[in-house]
Image (cartoon, rainbow, N blue to C red; front, side, top):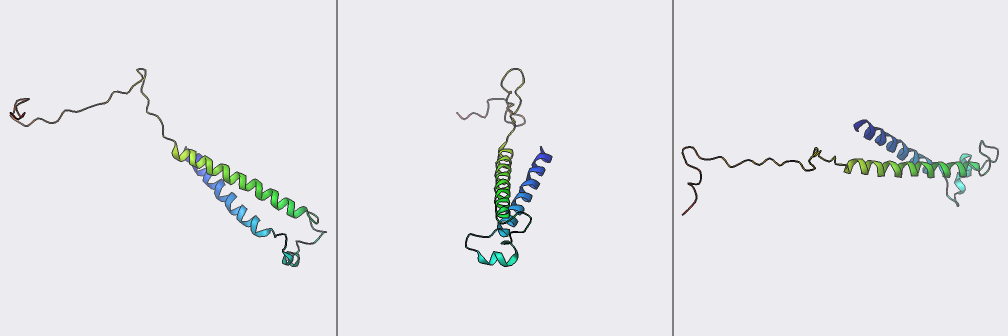
Amino acid sequence: MLYLKTLIIVVQLLSALSVIGLVLLQHGKGADMGAAFGSGASGSLFGATGSANFLSRTTAILAAVFFVTTLALTYIGSYKPQISAGMLGSAPVATSAPAAKAGSAPGSDVPK
């Protein structure tokens, strides 16, 4: 269970950092400065609007991965294994009697 929890934490960290990076790479609708860094070029790898669609879809997928890993970590963190009761259906509860004083008979300390 520890390896699974560690794997989920690593996936969550990678998705969180990727979402942060992808959000910073995207530009808003009114961002004219984005064209200065080459995002407005139509001859790019993704085309004129292809990079925006690719980045937004990738961001949405990584956000969903982050959400699922958060729910999985919450579930794993709140999981408490049940104590096995055996075949009888209830576990016996061990009770110990209070220690008796040395040299006194049982029931002799009852006030009268």
